Length: 428
Image (cartoon, rainbow, N blue to C red; front, side):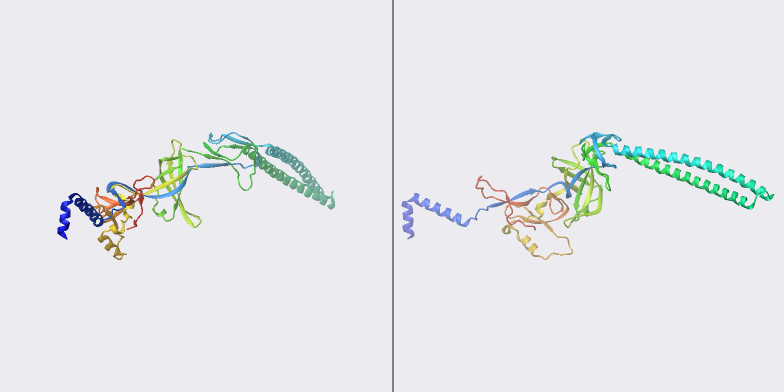
């Protein structure tokens, strides 16, 4: 049989060579490993800054906002300012119809004059009563002297005494009327002063210099000053200094301290990062749908006027910062290669029961010559940020670590490799 094959191969060398090549190719295909349809994305360990931040949402507010209200009721006849109008302290903002208040002033003036006239009449009555009292005192003295000599009867003396008592009572009554008239003058004067004060309050003036940021009244509107003063205008006293009011979750508020740096952006300028500083952490809790948060106030300069009151701020409060340290992407600490690619020492380590007395171990996977056989490396971490984490020990700058996996399957629409995929990526 072998001689027959050799003889045939000798006579048909071309066909023999082709058969050998086909057999070798089939054997290679059978014995060689199947190509992987995924790969790993690497990141280089480097030095840089690591920031730990607390993210929150908030609002931009004026540092000091004054609500200007009306203390008298009436119809607004004129408004002299508009939105964004700069105003000075004492500047006239609006007028309320003063007709009714002027009538009260005139009525008060009339009441005051009437009370003064009553006082003058009472004082005249007192003078007359004092004169009558003096006459009766002299008459009684004469009758008493004559009665001692027997020229006046006892009845005449008693009548003179009664007339003297009546004169004294009349004098006391008139003096009381004078006190009453003076009290009426004080009351009328107070009512007149109140009416005059209300008359001045029909002129709505700015209590401080600033900018009108809100106008809540128009000519023809009617305001009613009852138990609550109606607001007509809002004045921001200084828009070159603003503040950000951020709501921080109760789980993060313990990390926030006065003086920490704050970075935030607003939707109007998404590419600009504004800088602020924590001024106050308010201790009053705010509960909304069983979610407890606390208000953090941060001061921010606004010299260029880009920030406007009411803007929504996306806030990052820097609670920890480490400059120029060894760092890796934070996702690398949570990444785990595919199950078939995990080294044996990592599998054995995962089987060990956790030691509650020690801090939980952190591990990363370092790239080797074989892209599908990474090496596990235990590391000690420092400051943890959203983007990067500080590595205290276990890695050196320049080493490459695995951060995620990606599909190598060609896309149906483009025929190129796909984006990153989750695969067997899990937290280590």
